[in-house]
Image (tube, rainbow, N blue to C red; front, side):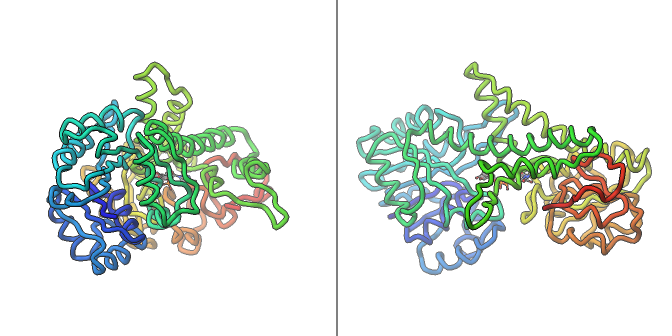
Length: 457
Ligand code: UGA
C-alpha cells in the first residue's frame, strides 16, 4: 500500500517508519527541507530508541522516503495520514496545522488513487475529524465523502522512549471511520497486527479514546500524589506502603496460579513531582477546555491539573524543612527531562522547581545525562549552573533534589561527600535506608527510624 504521512514529527516519523517496516511504501511529507534531507540520508531527526536503525533500513530498502512536495508524494497514494502538531494555545488546541493539512491533501487528491482514505493521527478534540477535516477535504478536492474519499481517526498510543516498540507491538488499534470501506482499508493497512485488539468505531469515539486514555493515566498520577501529600502530613505513614496495599487488590494486580500479575499502571501510582511531557498536560487541558465549551465541566480533570501544577511545591517544601532559608545555598537538581530515557524537557516539573529554588535565593546546580542542552534552550533566561558530571554536580551542595528517575541516580549514595547532606527524593526512586537525611514525597515523619520498610518495592 502507498501511504503518505504529513508531518515528520515524533508521531509521523515513528508511524512512517513502522508502516514501512510492515511492508508499505511510505512517503513522509514535511515543510522543513533540512528534516527531509536528514530522513532521506537515513538519519532520524529525533532521538528515539531503535528508530534510527529502522529508518536507515527502510530508506535503504526504498520503502521509506521524505519530500517537501505533497503533490508528488500523493501520486497513486491510497492512504494519507495527518500527523501535524496540535499545540494548546492556553485556551484550546490550535487546529490551524490540521486545517492546512486537510486543505493541502484535498488540493492534491487528484493525484491519489481513485479511492483514497485520509486518516487523522494527530490528537484532536471530539468532532474535529468529521466537522473540520471532512468538509475541508471535500471542498478542496471536489470529491464527496464515500465517493472516492474515505475518512477516519486513528489515534496514536506511542510513549516517548518506547515509541517504536509501541508501534510494532500495539496494545490496541483504534480506528474510527466514517464508513465500512474506510474501515476495511485501514484494517488492511494494519493487517500485520491482526492478532491485536481492534476497536472499530466512529471518528468521535476514536478521538475520545485518545483523550480518555491519557486523562486516565494523568488522573492516576495526581491521585497517587494527592494521597501522598496527605500521607506526608499524617505522621508515621509512608505513601509507598499505602499505595502498595492499593496495588495488591486482585482487581488491580490479578492473583493467578503462577503468581501475581504486576500491571504497568502500578508505576503511575508511585508518588512524585508530577507529570509533564508533550502529551498529558496538553491533552488533559484540551479535554477540560472542550468540556467547558460544550457545557460539561470536567471537575475531576480540573483537579488533576491543579494537583499537578502544585506538585513541585511539595518537593520545595521538603527542601525548606531540611535547610530552612534557601538564600545563598547551593542545591543540586538531578534530572531535567520530563521522564527518564529522553532529552525532552517540555512541561518538565524540573522547570517550576528550579524557578522556585532560584526565587528563594538558592544557587542551583543542575545535572541530567542528556537533557542539559534542551533545558538550556528552553529556559535560556534562567541562571542555572549546568553540570554534565554527576559527582561534580553534587559536590559541596547543601541538598540534593532528585526530579527524574534516571537509573544512574540509583547509586547516588556512593557518590555523596557526606551522609549528612539531605536528599529530597521527588520520585520515590531511591532506597531511603541508604541515606542519613532522606525526605521523599509522601513519606511522613517516622518516630523510630528504620521501622517502616521503604524504598521502591
Ligand atoms: C503518554 C502515554 O503514556 C502514551 O500512551 C501516549 O500515547 C502518549 O502520552 C501520547 O499521547 O502521545 P509520554 O508522554 O511519552 O506518553 O510518557 P509517559 O511515560 O506516559 O509519562 C508521562 C508523564 O507522567 C511523565 O512526566 C512521567 O514522569 C509521569 N509519570 C509516569 C509519573 O509521574 N509517574 C509514573 O509512574 C509514570
